Image (tube, rainbow, N blue to C red; front, side):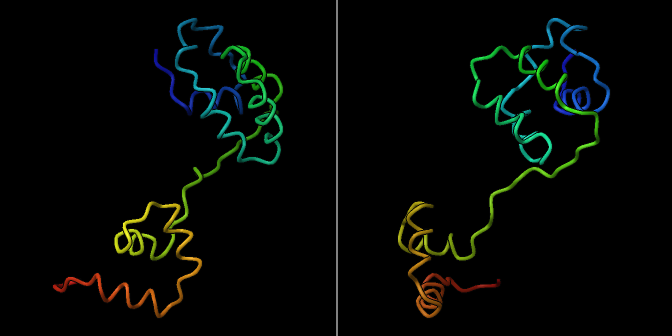
Length: 128
């Protein structure tokens, strides 16, 4: 059986049922990076996640057992963190041909009039 992320998180957070003991082939479905990322979003599991990040050489089973035995039973739901959208980033990138990093730096020094000029230069007409 192929286990999904929600199965792993539910077993650690709520049911405390050890999936790896029941199904020996399930270890390959366990992704420590994603599980750590999920637990790093909660104040009560942040330090546990950090501890696992300090020891990435540990086996998947050992990491899973650590979480299974140390995390208290609780319903934890958090949205996946997304990159913030930076206004006018694409505008500067296309006008100057910059990368994301260079465009972010440029946005710090460009004023509103300069951005307005760049926007007018890049307008191609037609319906918006």
